[in-house]
Length: 127
Length: 281
Image (cartoon, rainbow over the protein chains, first blue to last red):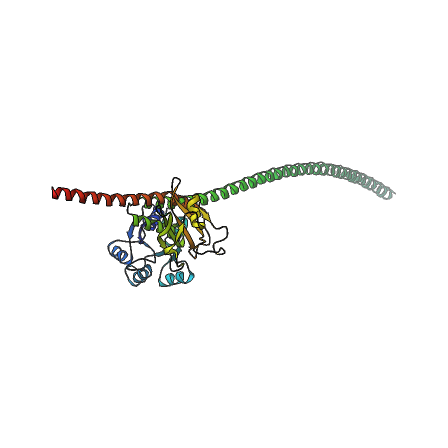
């Protein structure tokens, strides 16, 4: 399988770096970063993205709105989405998944958990 | 009477012939019986000899098979022992793999935290990075960063998160040596509640954890943690590592950024003074 292109949507540079650090275990992958939902939509229109990893609480446009817009767009709706957030309550998880996210990870993240979730969503993603 | 003599003679002759034939038949029958007896004897002997040999062969074969079974059972036991040994090694490797994964994760967290803390000299940015680390890497919901004012010897909040769930943390103050927070600054030792976070008594005077921000032995402030995210029930091993890192790296980053902003201000003042001298001259 050709290397995946991940879109990491996070307003925190620390978290962006930490997530990117974990993703680099996928051979040949490419990482595109966005600081909020609007920035993410711009990147989605100009890049071929295989998977989106997004925070919820962000300025300008939050992660839930982004998930909703991606799922309504016929060109983007098939892209797997993982929500990574501090909002760990069950109702938040249910809301995220109901909007169309494929997986929901509560912070603080464990690198191994993130890798396993990606492998489950994209079998053969490779490491 | 020749006819009478002839017939007697013929009759005698026939009798003799019959007797001769009878004797021959008897002799033949006796020979047959003897031969039969001899053959039966030989058959019985042959059967006796063949059975014993066959039984002997069978016994040998059984003994050989038993020996083989024992050998195979011994091999089986050895294979089982080897299998159990390999299984134990596998479990050991799996357990080590999990440990290495955790270590890898911890190192990544520490690397990213350290990298980000020293990525800027702007005081507010450094404070923001410390806040991000405590939220995202430690998993704290409400906490305050208090810095020491050397002139008044008092700590006060300069950064915080979660004032909505823990009102009052945005304006905390503490004297050095007073209370838990002041005590940590004085001793330079981290403080953690002994109980599980959800069972501990937590208020503004009694945080869950207090981590000193130290440059060598000089304490410049603390991070006081009041609550953890819902999904995090307690502190983990890596949190203590992160706290140790924060104690040193965050203190250095905060101190360096403060010095830098002071020197920037001084430089600006000196530059303005020089400009004034140049213009007036």
